[in-house]
Length: 110
Image (cartoon, rainbow, N blue to C red; front, side, top):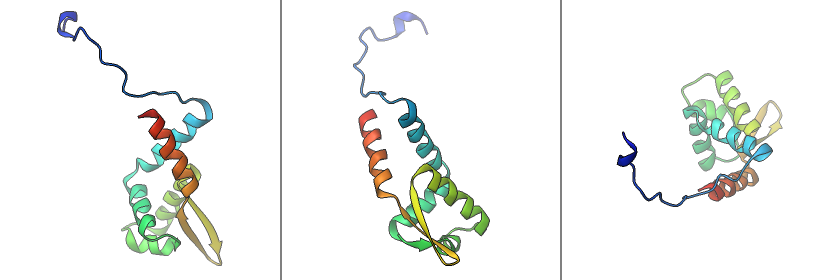
């Protein structure tokens, strides 16, 4: 493609990318966590089943409990979910504060 084939008028920027440092690292970590189809399915499950235990998620997904636990760990470390130990089980729910932060940052970018 030659220079004459490009438009002569460049459209204005549609958004901003004014994010850096720790906030950018946090946002990237959250995006990466959601980028896995299994973790995305876990998030969808927790939207309709807040306060569920690991066993509930294992019954929902066709994967081993150890694998589910690994995915839950990634989601927890990225800030998407929170959990509390209740005896031998862990009860999980969406972390609304972190989700609100994520939505705000994405809204600022786009």
